[in-house]
Length: 97
Image 1 (cartoon, rainbow, N blue to C red):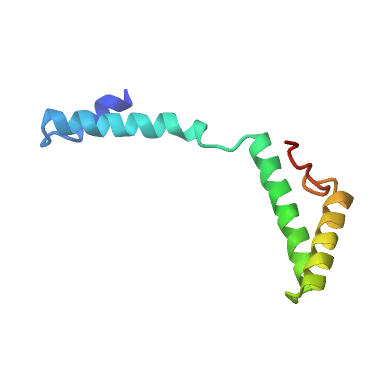
Image 2: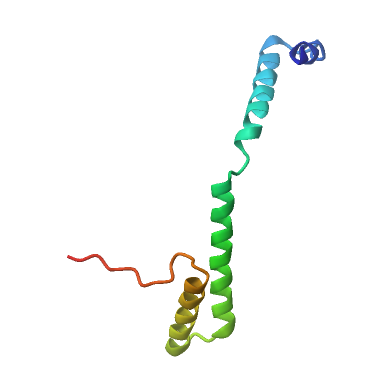
């Protein structure tokens, strides 16, 4: 029904342009529901934001770039991540050769 209305409104346009327009319209209609973020995506975004907040807090607490300050900054960042139960709060194991 809606397709007939669209086609009638395009009387001066040739068939190839009508086909392209209808294809584009169909793609827009089908892409709408698929473009929404699901719960896992939203949760992941929240985790990343919380991790960024821990990093920013550590930088505010230790703004200098001396080796001692960088060490304290990393310790503060990891403590924040552990307290918030976020990934990256513990030392990663190095691969054994």
